[in-house]
Image (tube, rainbow, N blue to C red; front, top):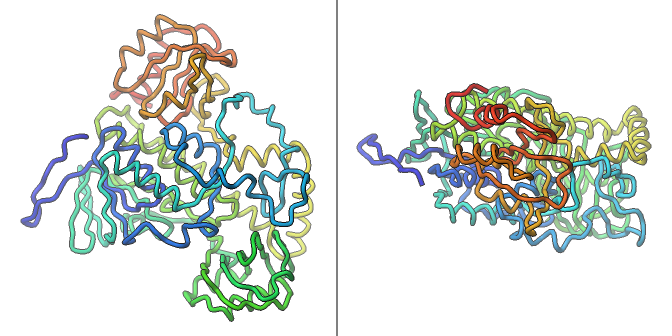
Length: 520
């Protein structure tokens, strides 16, 4: 761990951390671990007294992980600790699914698409050894795993601490929380959609207002058979019962109830359910309930000097399609190594700026994806017509494949300079002749110079950058015609070639991403 400097302020001793992260959810905890892996000192401040919340457990806390998030867990040696997904074979199958029916593998606005229609042969760089494309977990499981990881790396987590003021100078940030004062070189807000860091840091948060109030509730229903199972879009909204008593509602009231702050009473929930479903179902008890909306907003920048945003602090949207967690984890993976290199004075000029230029467009696409789903689900004649068109498209191979690669994150790409079509995409999980795969070589969080042909010049280059890169000369069982790759710490391919190359060309690309004094 880097040396932690002590400073004197207000006659009391405080610690100057490299980074303070506000928010101990999955995004904040994973980012903290990425920074600690790169030898940065990190303090995590969390408003809640405890990580436990019944809303983070099944069924409320269920989340779908996309391919980039699953790769992330493998690359840091954390995937084996996940347990919930082993118990859930196909989360899209409802209780009344007919045996031997086509396997549903996703949906858009509740409209399903099926495995038989997805043409995975189009994804040239997804090998048989590739990690899963999607699976289910819960927020509490992820937070538990990431908390253990953070503690193993020596990260300090303080809970029950509310941030109420921030100030920054040219070289430090001061955080005032309750009666305590904390100091760091950088501050990252991972504190959710109502981020205090975003508000105190003066970030603009632009977007669209809600069209509905969403309800998620666990209830006892006297005559629940009237509802049936699955998703139903009606003339008055949408309701879903995925298992007995677990209901999700969308009431297109422009978010009025959610914004009112009123308590969700049994009588109110029953009235909304009856209105949307056009049934006379009777609720006898509400065990748990919460509301949400489709408000979609995004910070116009993710950085204000020494303040940064990640996860829901940087962007909020409807939870339709479950993209929020994956988007936030992608932010953390992209930011971690870049911020660490900046702190250690090893970053090329402009490296930290690429966090925003790479991640902001990804966030924009997710917000638009959420808005598009809402438009299809609206209780109007126009939306009903659009839904019919979308349903037809999803039953085609082109439509289902497009949906799959978007929802599973397979199409994630950063527009990096380079001529090879793999540049800017996640590195394939190559299987090697020694029985390992690429993810087994990525646990340290370093860049990789992967050499399939024991090239002398690449070996020489690898030796020149031992702190930034890990040089690996190894034979792959299937190398897709590639001779060598340069892979960033976040798993993104910065350079790849199937042809002969000049040593100086590769050296320039390495220095562009890993050497101080070079301008990106």
